[in-house]
Amino acid sequence: MTGCTPSSYSRLLQRYVAPAVAMSAIYASAAHAQAEYPTKPVTIIVAFSPGGPNDVMARMLAAKLSANLGKQFIVDNRPGAGGTIGTTLVAKAPADGYTLLFNSAPFVTAPALYGAKLPYDTLRDITGIAKVAESPLILMTAPESPFKTLKDLIAAAKAQPGKLNFGSGGVASTPHLATSLLGVTTGTDMQHIPYKGGGPAITALMGGETDLLLDSITTSGPFLTSGRLRALAVTGTKRASKLPNVPTFAEAGLPEYQMVHWVGLAAPGKTPPALLDKIHGEVVKAMAADDVKARFAEIGAEPAVGTREEFNEFLKAEVAQWTTVVKQANIKPE
Image 1 (cartoon, one colour):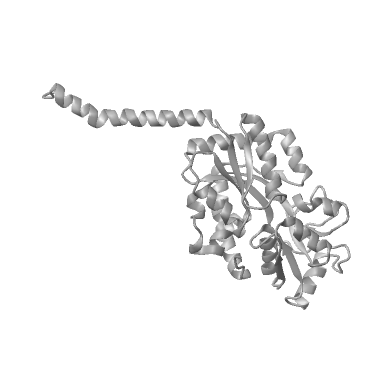
Image 2: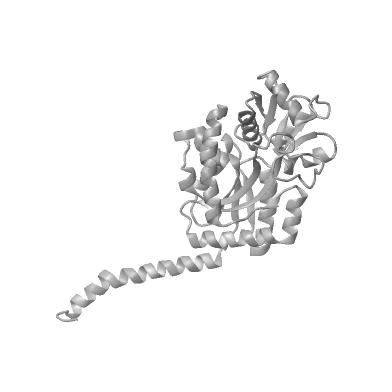
């Protein structure tokens, strides 16, 4: 290094080499932290009440992750405002993998429902880790209902616009969205009655307070198999194994209607990719276990884990689709 004195060489080291060494140390520390993850309990936020399908499946996944990784994955229910209360907590949490979100359809409808009032950017401040599972939705009535088929119900809804009512676990819950989509698809107008959770919505249907409910098999299955509710049709491309005598929507005459209940795991948007990859790998491992697949099958759900990229592309597409449906169905937030 011609013309470089010891003192100037020292200054060059301080200017160029020292920062690089410092950055290398930071990266090495981060890599070590990711390799050791988790070193403490992990919180999985479920933005809905206990007992619903999201909560049930989140607890199944959390139990397996806890067993596999030796640290507790704790489900924390934070319901309210169409799922945005719980989502906000994750969006604003440290991006260190210790606060995660178990999300579903309301997550992707929030931008259309709340617009600029939403305290986070759905696709920027939250990043998907993996879709976890899918389960069919069941269109149900009470056993005493005059509607025996999907065609019966749709015909009545068209004949008397606004007379039939449907329940849900709250505004922008999956049953609300699914039935609104059914109305858009069939050109019918049905009144929405929100309840404080999926359980009360099922109770209301059995008690005759509502005419129909379109909800996940994960919560309604026991009521259907026991005869306390009647199933008219099931979403998806095939019949549900737990309800082999119930036709799909396509078989019942409405092939254009398709929606399933999906759940996934997400994290704060700035979480390092290497850490997201590690968590994704653990989800893949957990959902591939025979005991987990058996437990999910018991409630009518199937693992649906793909890549992180696939899940994030799915979320983008869902945000776009539901922006249109929310507008057409005139869904308003609480």
